[in-house]
Image 1 (spheres, helix red, strand yellow):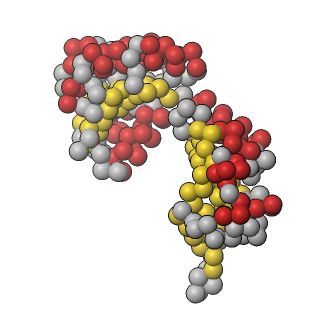
Image 2: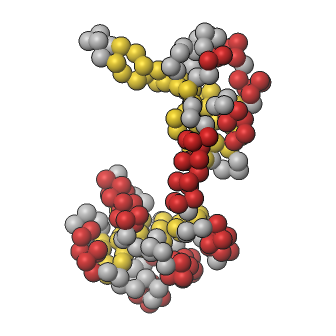
Image 3: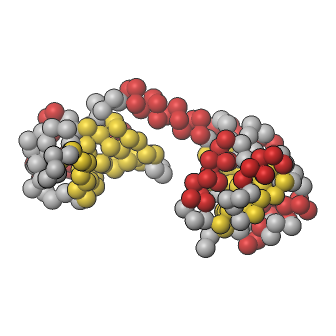
Amino acid sequence: MARYVVVGLGRFGRTLVDFLTREGKEVIAIDKNPDLVEDVKECVARAVSMDATDEDALAAQELDKVDVLIACIGEDFEANQLVTVLAKKLGVKRVITRVGNPLQMKIMKLVGADEVICPEEESAKRLAQKLTHPNIMAYFELADGHSLIEVKSPKHFEGRSIRELDLRKKYHINLIAVKHIVTDEKGNTIEKVDDLPTPDYVVQAGDILVVVGKDEDVERIAR
């Protein structure tokens, strides 16, 4: 089983711990605030109240046996940076660090973080997508300028088959699923998902298309 260390039990860190433990993962939770550690100790494998920037204290946690460490010590950039450096030095396979802005993201990558996340920037991007492309129901940023989105089917798609639309050739995107509302035998409305719909599938009003491709291409059908 993969072992995770979460350093910093603020709102972000605690939420992360809750999700990981709910999925049955082994989690070691670290924070220098004993009250936060006390609150989480019943749901994790080990909860430790300590200064994670202390190399000796961090080394005592046997980080060479840990698969992933997430450094998310609130707004303390210097502490997160030091924890990142120490974690890599102590043999953690993968270190993920939370930052507050793009400049900090660049610095963390330079000091050895395997992955850097900026929740505020990501939330702002999602909000901007929602405001500028109201037909986009969900947006997931992938690597290298690619995205996966759930988008309301455009009016000019309705009544046309997947073969006729030829999305890959005309729009340079791939359709991986279609969501639509159906009525069951009891008259209840439920959401149905058709994975990899056939070329003969005809797009209906209200369909949600799940597509993947370059950012500019997937956004083009949402306009």
